[in-house]
Length: 267
Image (tube, rainbow, N blue to C red):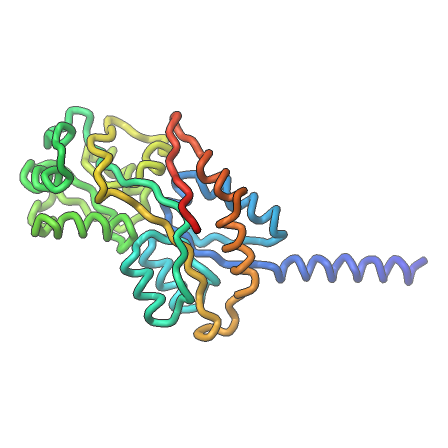
């Protein structure tokens, strides 16, 4: 009896250790988390795959650094030029597009920069550059921050020239929105995070729908040839799940305020 009990206990401990070993580290952009989609997608993936998926929620720039350093097994981010550079450098095996959403320009309800009626995104940024209004920037090398800088560059303007009304905060999307609320400022954010954000204050979406505001999310497995400890086999399981019909249905059916906020486009 005692031997049988000890044997049973040993099996339980062995199974527990095995479960602990099935752990994958995934660095994800803060907008994926702040939007609330991660709370729907990741637990279902864990349940279906019997994996413990450890999320590191950071900006895209930091996620790429974590991947390059071998601190995570894969990344889910949204800055195509940086993703392609990571693949070119050999630290990521490839990039696989999973889903997209869109950026929006949020600002004070009174819209002092008068951007809501503008039909062109570059004219929106022209007006923001001249209107002497507060503008909050992520300032953290995230995908959202890099998109913002890309748009300023398209009108050949250095946002630092706005002066103290250009507020670079060096933080994630949720915190940046809170600061924009406090300063009654304009801000570039992804629509999903904005709709999911509770503290909207006096702010509202003032501009959306331009093709330049397209926001693609991609999955990049870290290259085992560069970091031998990477859990490549487990990452493959996650990737296959992310492109499955179940993942597609979860992504496409994620609704906030009667709005579909992500669209699955993996192939």
